[in-house]
Amino acid sequence: MRALPRFSRPELIVSDRRIMLWAASGAAVLCAVIQIVLYVTGAYARGAASLAELALNLLLDASLPLVVRFPRTVGALAVAVTAAFALGVALAPSVVASRIALPVAAPILVSFLVVLLPWRQAFTFAAVLALPAIPIWSPSWGALNVALSATALPALIALYLQARSELIRSLRKRAELADSERHLLAERAETAERRRLATELHDIVTHHVTEIVLNADALRVTTRDDDARAAAEQIRLAGTRTLTELRDLMRVMNTGARTAAAERPDDDTGGDLAALAAADRAALHVEGDPGTVPAVVARAVYRVVQESLTNARKHAPGAPVTVTIVYPGDRVDVEVRNVPPRRSVDPTLTSAGSGMGLIGLNRRVTLLGGTFGAGDDGAGGFTVTASVPASAMRNAPLLRS
Image (cartoon, rainbow, N blue to C red):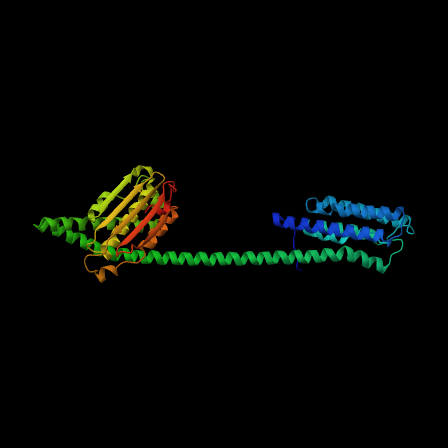
């Protein structure tokens, strides 16, 4: 035999309580208005009994908004009013305005009690309200029908609606959980694929960059040309930095950004801007005190200059590059400008990039609350600008690389 659904007193959220309070208040006003209109228009016989009956009905109507917070108290008040009605009908049936010993608001009250109380308590209140409405001294099918229609029927309807509402809410929650789980599995699969691609990319790039570094080191040792030796040393250092940064990036991919960031010192500014500009033969102009910005902002500035110089080498070979960094105190302004290229662009070199450099810079600067811009200067050159506030978050783990 299938058991009845077990309803403990539901934990209503604030919005549910507010809706029920408005519904109870509206029902109370509606019942009170109808009863007063019927009494004033003479639908009920005038007299002390009718006035007492109206007063008891209005008392119960006024207590309806309190049922949301005090359901048992209001239920007990309804039982007392119903008992008073039954006593009046039993003692003086000829002078009582209504021959039905039930308050007008009884069906509404029973519906609220079913929602707010455990179903056993709610049906107990409904039964206690129904019994006085059936005069045992003169029972009739009509009185039984009215009593059940005013108590049992609203209770069953409210119980059905509550069970249906809980079922819909449960199905909606299951659908949301399933959707969340599907997104989580998709994200995990995407992360695993990214790690696999990153590992494969690491193997390929590490192999070729290591080969470049070894050849550059061999050239540096064997050549007698000072310029060639300096160029070989620059290639070797650039390759070494690439391998180091690639290793850090793989640590981020494998252990998580926060773990990798925690291993980096808080005073790491990314690198020496002067050495970076000198390696690319760019003119560097610095105004203000770099110590006015936190390390995370300094790292962002370094990355902006680094990526801009790389783009200038690729897309404007031989063109002079000017790097201007200004520290007004509340922010840092960066401008990297190059004139039109003086040599033809190598298509193999320009197509070797991922095309995500400027997009990554824009994201990095934007996450720090700054602004980023890049585009032609109208004279054949290219300009990259960035402005990052000095009050940017000092613990930005995802931007520490």
